[in-house]
Length: 386
Image 1: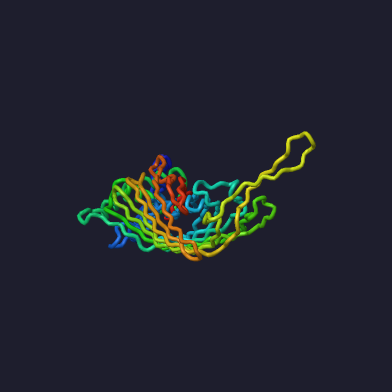
Image 2: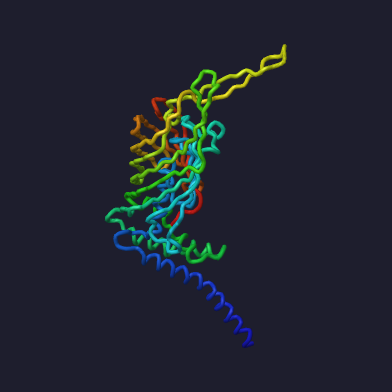
C-alpha cells in the first residue's frame, strides 16, 4: 500500500519538474533579454534590428540592401541580375547589427533600357563579383512621451511570448539562441502590427565594387559590307560610395540615397554606336535560290574610357504597399556628360503572415535622351539577421 501511495506522489512531482524546466529556461532568457534594454531605447537591439530589416526589405529594388542572409535583384538601372549573400560577423552574440559584409555574383546586360536579355547580352561574357561593405549608424525608434510602452512590451514578453515559446518547445527542442530569435521576432511583429511607435529612422553608408570575372567581347566594323571586322574586349569594373537613410511613420515611409560612382565606360554603354545587320550572299548551284547569311555588328570605331557619376534617389511607400520613386544622375569625365532620370512606382507584396515577400518597381527612364519602360524586382531569402 505504501508503494502505491509513493508512486502516486512521485509521478505528479516528476511531471511538474519536467514542465518546470522549460518554463524556467524561458523565464531566464526573457529576464536576460529585458536586462539588455537601456533607458534611451525602449526595445532590445535584436528587436530593433528586425524592425529596421523589415523596412529595408520593402525598398530592396531601390536600396539594393537586405538584412536577410541572401537576396536576389533584377536591376533595371544597368540591366543586371544580382545574387547577393550577407556575412554576419556577430558570431553568437547577436547584438546590434552595425555592419554587413556582402558578396555575390552579378550578370550585366546590354543597355537596352528594359529587361535583362540572356541571348542578346552574351551573358556568359558579362559575369562579375559584387562586393559590398555597409556600415549602419545607430537607428532611432520614437514613441509618445505619455505612452507606457516599456511596461506594455514587458507584459507582452512575460505572458504572450512566454506561452508562444512553451508551445514551440512542445513541438521541437529549441536552444537558447533560437528562443532569443523567437522573442525578437514576435516582439517586432507586435510593435509593427499595433503601431506602437511614432516614427523610426536609420542611416547607413555603403562602399561597393564590381570586379569582372569574364571579359565582354564585341565585334565592330566601319565598312558597309562588313568585310573588315575587329573584336574588342571590355572589363566593366565600377566602384561607388553612398549615404542612405529611411524614415518610417505609421502610414508612410521614405528612403533616400546619395551616390558617387566611378566606372569603366565605352561607346556601347553610352549608346553612341548601334548595331547594324549585314547580309552576305553565299554561292549556290545554278537554278537554286541564293543562300544568305545575316550578322549584326557595331558600326563605327570602338572607344573605351573612365566615367564618373553622382546620383540622388528617393522612394516612398504608403501603408508599406505602394508608392512613388524618382532618381536623377549626372555623368561626367572624358566627354560623357549625360543627365539621366528615372520615375518609378514601387510595390511591396507581403505573404500570409504579413511579412515582406517580394518587392518590385515599375520604371519609366530617360537614358541618353531615349525613353524606356522597365521593371526592377527584389526578393530576400532566409530569416532576418537579428
